[in-house]
Length: 79
Image 1 (spheres, rainbow, N blue to C red):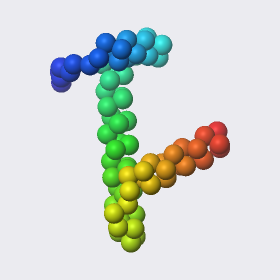
Image 2: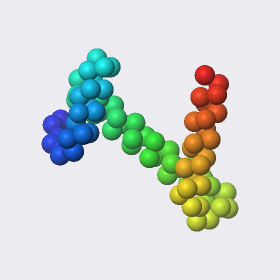
Image 3: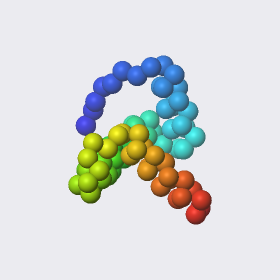
Image 4: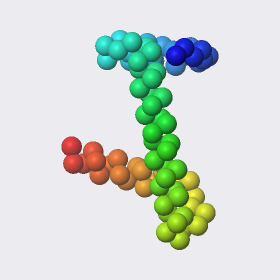
């Protein structure tokens, strides 16, 4: 599938540099990044719903970000 997007020049440069460094095409890097973004967004939405169901109604978005940051920190500490 072909999709046309307009991005800032600085982002284009970062994408091209990263794709070259990782030995990937720009297209595959964009697809991978988009897939990652959508999965992470879905995880956050599910996490927020779980917290709301658990009785934490109207959970602030920064609370969810804090939980994700803590999870990443713990994962990095184990590595």
